[in-house]
Amino acid sequence: MNKPLWMVLLALAMGSAAAQSPLDAAVAAYQRGDLTQARSAFLQLSARGVPAADYNLAVMHLRREMPAASDSEALRLMTRAADGGFVTAMVGLAELHELGRAGLKVDLAQSVLWSRRAAEAGSVDAQVDVATAHYLGRGAAKDLALAARWYRLAAQRGDVGAMFITASFYESGEGVERDLAEARYWYAAAARNGEPGADLKVKELDAKLATKPAS
Image 1 (cartoon, one colour):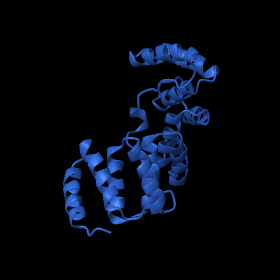
Image 2 (cartoon, helix red, strand yellow):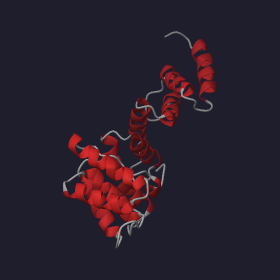
Image 3 (cartoon, helix red, strand yellow):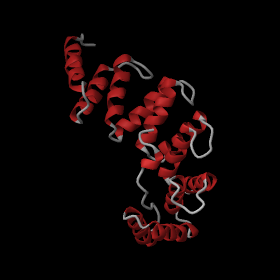
Image 4 (cartoon, helix red, strand yellow):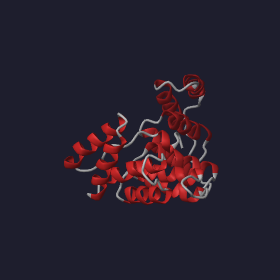
């Protein structure tokens, strides 16, 4: 995970336009330090079934910003938000299981399950997490082909580190058929986005491709 859960900013809604304005107001109240108003607004939105409100209440429980703050209530709310399709909550649950927070034991397999749900829903960070889990065999079966697939998906969505790793897979033939031209493509993409060392790999592969016999 890239950032501890309690460092993540409270999330905005992924729900209806009707819920968006009250949720914006609730988030604004939280950000200016008016926890009483924020709690009240999030509770009302939660009662209306807004997953983002459930997630934000869960985070407030974890930060001990709720009266009688409860880890179990945080887990209930975050799970409901995740089951409601809120991707940030899926990522949050993966992190809680990975770190053993909120009264949970460390459970890497459960963490990867939640990361996979978030990855399938389009979270780039989760795609990298799932790829890494398969690459290392940490919480998931070691599977270089699956690792390569998830890294490439993250690369296609703009993750610069995943671009470099995807390039290295094609260069070495790990998890994919070796393809220096494809490796060069991804190193070049990483270089354009400022990844250190990627420009040197482009030059290295240019030299190799220039001397490669024509097939």
